[in-house]
Amino acid sequence: MRFFLVDDDDVVRMMLTEIIEEEGLGEVIQTALDGSTVTDELLQMNHIDILIIDLMMPVKDGLATVRTLETYQGKVIMISQVESKEMVEEAYTLGVEYYITKPINRVEVCTVIRRVQERMKLEQSISDIKKSLRLLDLVPDQTRVENPFTEKSITTAGRFLLGELGIEGESGEKDLLAILRHLFQLERNGSFENDFPLLKNLFDQVARHQLGSDVTEAKLKREVKAMEQRIRRAIEQSLAHLASIGLTDYAHPKFEKYASRFFDFTEIRKKMIQIQKPQVFGKEKIRINMKKFIQILYFEAKRAIG
Image (tube, rainbow, N blue to C red; front, side, top):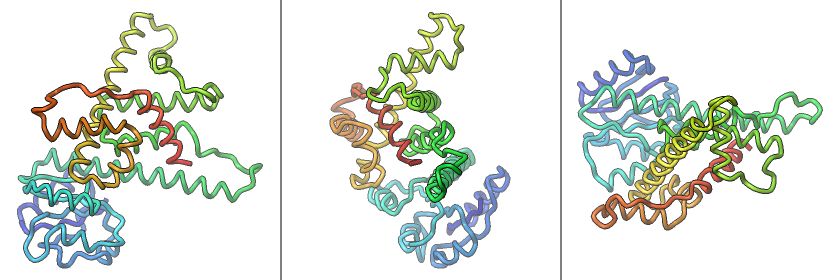
């Protein structure tokens, strides 16, 4: 990966360069003291994958710089020690979703950059799958030797969606991906043409497949219960993630695209109030519809590759 660093602090630029190159995250191609020299043409000419830019700088700050970028296709990571709701809201509107806070911390820098890189790889995989589908549409059916709608492609699409939903790295992520693969197999075998499987049966079948056919009923029961808890926690995390985005910017594309599809409006609204006014709801559990979430996740994953 090729990086461009923009920060008026020499020490910050030096630290980021050392972390990126020592950790094998990529190569710092160019740096700048402020955004006055950063243009679409410069970023494209240097094939910059990730632009890391400070929010507050003299001459031309991070927001002003990002605002001028129209054709840059890479990712932007914002550095800031300022926690202004208005600035964060504008950054979200401009497409900035990733932040590194000052003072610079090696672990945080590596975590954020790796998360961005993983997202870029997933987006590229989705793009490649869609290109394959478009190409296959130009080839007569009898010459087709590969079907892009596969177990691997449904997993790739699912992983991308879970990242979008804020569940990346959650323990329930693997369970949800396993369920997507199982649903793919069921649909391929024509097992749920008219009705979606019951969650109890779905969890049981996935757990049995993971543990093996000779698993005892007691062990299977424990794993099904643990799986359900992991998935519930992951969905609750997604609800909190989307509600937080909605509080910052109700018109944010991610909030508009996913919130109403994966959750009921009342669930989203209650979570937003809970975050905004914790003294009202405290830690009261908000009811979530697990079956709806899993159904939409599967259908959205299919749509992403179709």
